[in-house]
Image (cartoon, rainbow, N blue to C red; front, side, top):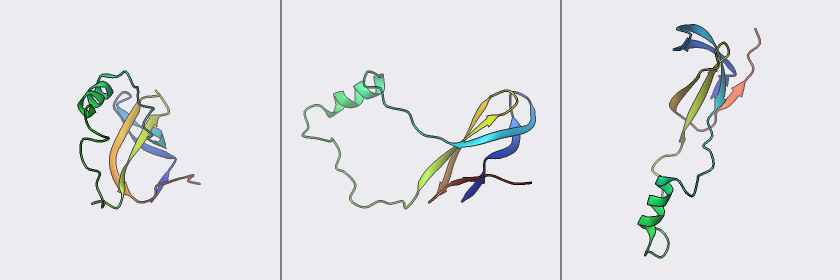
Length: 95
């Protein structure tokens, strides 16, 4: 699926439709001392490797891609969740 690099959409901070730059969301590096990670490691104690068996076959073929829309006027960032596509490509739109 091809998505333009600049989209005109609603900005809640500006309260008008403004141009937003589009990028693909990537999760950051996990912190080993965060509460969730400590809880996960505490739950895993006492087992050989993982608590639950790893899935042999995948139920889904694609992953959900998250788009980050950043307002070019005020810099406010909106996340568009859950577009299920095999390949997402950002393209330059020539007017």
